[in-house]
Structure formats: C-alpha cells, structure tokens
Length: 377
Ligand SMILES: Cc1cc2nc3c(=O)[nH]c(=O)nc-3n(C[C@H](O)[C@H](O)[C@H](O)COP(=O)(O)OP(=O)(O)OC[C@H]3O[C@@H](n4cnc5c(N)ncnc54)[C@H](O)[C@@H]3O)c2cc1C
Image (cartoon, rainbow, N blue to C red):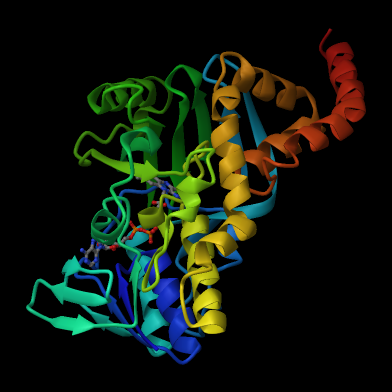
C-alpha cells in the first residue's frame, strides 16, 4: 500500500512510523521542520505511553514532573503529587525526535508543503510534485488543507483559542482555572524555559483580551515570567461536539484525518497530543487489518471517541461558576479529592467514570474534610 501522510506533527509522524512498520510505502510531507508549534507541550502519562521507545543515544526530549499546583483563580490553591509523572516538551524537539523515529522506521520525509489533494489519492506539492497514493492521511493540524478539501473546515463553535509565550527561566507547574473564560491559565516548565498560556472557547472572548488578561495575571502572580521580549502567539485547538457524527465524518474510501485535522482534542482541557497519537495508532491498525480507512471512524469512536463526546457534553458543568473553586478548595482538605482532580485534569480519569468515582470516594472525602476542619479550628 502506498500512503501519503500530510503533516509531520505527532499524529503524522506516529502514523508514518506505524504504517511503515506494517510494510506500507509511506511518504510524509512537511516543510516546516525545525519549528516550535504554539503548544504547552504537556504530555500526560497516557500520551507518554504511546511514544515509541527511545533508542540509545537519542533520549526522549521531555522534562518529567511529578507535582502540579492547581489554583481556583479565586484565592484557593493546592499542590498535588501526581501518581503518574507528566512530561513537558518543546514541540521543536519532540516533533523532530518523533520524525526521526518515523524515518528510521522506513518512512520517507519530503520537506515540501502539500498544495492540493483529492479524494482519489492525488497529492500535489509546492515543489511541483504530483503523485497518486492508495490512501491520503490528513495530519496537517488545526487548519488542515486535507480536511478543508475533502470534508469541510472545523466550525468555529468547535474551536478553542489558546495564546501565550515561552518565557526564559523556570517555575513550578501551575494550572489556574478561569471559569469566567470557560478556560484556564498554565505555566508548564520545559527544559530551559517555561510555556506560559491561556485558553478559552474561540467565541468567548477576543484573543487580544485573553493575552491582556494573561499578561496582567502573570505580572501580578509570577512577575519573573512576563518576558516582554518573548513573541506572543495564538492558535486554535479543534474538538468534536457531543454528537457522534462529529467523529464519524473523519474518513472516506481513500482518505482519513487524524489528530487536530480530525478535530480530536479534549473539549475541556485542550489535550490534543494524546488524541493525535492515539488516532494515528487506530488508523494504522485499521489500514493494516482492512486495507482501507472505511471502518476507522467507528473504531476511533470505540477506542477513545466516547470519552471526547462525554467531555463535550460536560464542558458547561466543568466551567460552571463555583465548580473549579469547590474542587480546589476540597482538594486542599482531602487527599481523595486531590487524586481525583489530578487524574481528571491530567487525563488519567475518564469523564465517563467520574460520577461513579466521586460517589465511591464521598465517604472517605467526608471523613478527611471533617478531620481537616477540626485541625484548622
Ligand atoms: C497554545 C496551545 C497549547 C496546547 N497545549 C497542549 C498541551 O500542553 N498538551 C496537549 O496534549 N495538547 C496541547 N495542545 C494541542 C496540541 O498542540 C495539538 O492537539 C497537537 O499538536 C495536534 O497534533 P497534530 O499532529 O494533529 O497536528 P500539529 O502538531 O499541528 O502538526 C501538523 C503538522 O502539519 C504540517 N502541515 C500543515 N499544513 C501542511 C501542508 N499543507 N503540507 C504539509 N504539511 C503541513 C504543519 O507544519 C505541522 O508540522 C495545545 C494547543 C495550543 C494551540
């Protein structure tokens, strides 16, 4: 099978590696490397587990952290020990590392931008290449040309906007909720610098106001990270809705979308790297077993899609006034809630089982909360 992968971010590079390993002839097109994608670069434990093993002499370029501070944005704050450490990476380093794995695994990297595709597998590039493939994989990110050509652009109501900068220095890892923006601010320390950012649904607030808000909060709470010389960026994060059709549309007979091109980020947290990697894996398995992408959307729905649909349905409740504040306040007093909060935001607790876990935890929570109330009086 001859496969064109358009885009060498995490989705495209992992798909290229897996497909080449299965014996396909894979060409991965991307002219952008080396480049720093606007991104927090946070890899949850479940995302780290999907990465290929690092060869001797080329270690995975991530900084591992086992603590995160959660801040309600209204004065409550708690530091949580993470049962599973997260990794924070510069996307310049991480994506280049993954692309090296794909090329070592047999994929051919062509450093050209794809300018046109069609549903019959034809791919044309900025350098004049014109070639037909058995399958075209759109792994070309949030503004995907493959998606725009073969499906339709992701509607604005399914986009989160995220903005920030990369500051010199170091910090602890911080997630600060901003319920009035239906989003949050983050400080993600990477090797050598700190990713500082903010996210909110695209239609919620103008991007300039988001950046102003981030700058004033950082100036007040973390002045060392203002870094006025660092260029500010803004970029969208696409997600599905609660309607399964928003996931079942992501492939045709000879094409398929993965990662941001398929709009697969978590609608609550914006976590997209895990879904980029997982969708690449599910697509590669489908192509290996079926020789066609036709059953890939259904398999993606079964493998991880129901979680995303659930997140889309829960979005309003998660960012309802008072929810984050209560979670952080309770977490400060109860180890049980601390674990739930960390697992939820860091991707280890599925939205599906959340209610059940909270119900099961409530007797323990009640005891811990009462004990902490006695201790503080
Ligand atoms: C500000 C911000 C912060 C974020 N923070 C996090 C985080 O901390 N953790 C997390 O899990 N997720 C985060 N995300 C989401 C995450 O960045 C994306 O979900 C993830 O990068 C998707 O990977 P991908 O491979 O699908 O697409 P991308 O990483 O966008 O890669 C797409 C690639 O396709 C290439 N391309 C585009 N068009 C063409 C073309 N025509 N021809 C050839 N190549 C093309 C691009 O150059 C790029 O290299 C964040 C997003 C933003 C915007």
